Each structure stands twice: as C-alpha cells, then as structure tokens.
Image (cartoon, rainbow, N blue to C red; front, side, top):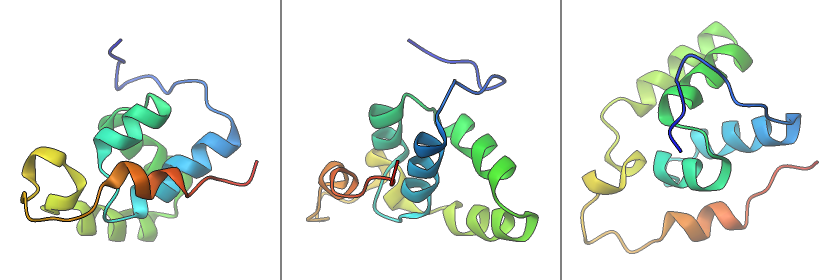
Length: 94
C-alpha cells in the first residue's frame, strides 16, 4: 500500500520516536524505516520537520543529502552490515 506524502499516518509517540531514531542513524535505510513503520521517506521528512527544532532539522537534512547509506540501491556491495539487524535492536521506550 502506498501512502500519500501529504498525510501523516496515525502513529503513537513511541512510533514517532522510533522513526526519528532510525532516521538519525546513518546505517538505517529509508527502506527499512518503511518496512518497520510503513512510513515513506517523504513522510519521514515531514515527521522530522514537525518534531525537530528548525536548526536540528536543517542539520539532519544536510547530513542525509547524498548519503549513500540511507538508500539500499546506492550502497556498495562491499558494505558488510545489514541495516535491518541494526534497526531490530533499537526500539523506542514505549
């Protein structure tokens, strides 16, 4: 099911916290965030804009631009980690 970037899905505060945590992690891809929460990259950006301070959001966006680790298809096959495993052990305190 695809989701409109204009609408935010109904998320608990714990889900929002998990999305923010995974979004800040360099190794967790947007695809993994979608698999875990059903939140697309566009909605992750909306959540980050809404939940972070303006300065923090700008810093996060600057970090994410061009970062190949945030998209599976851009990663080198030499990368020896699985972002799904990284995301599994990090859960928000609900």
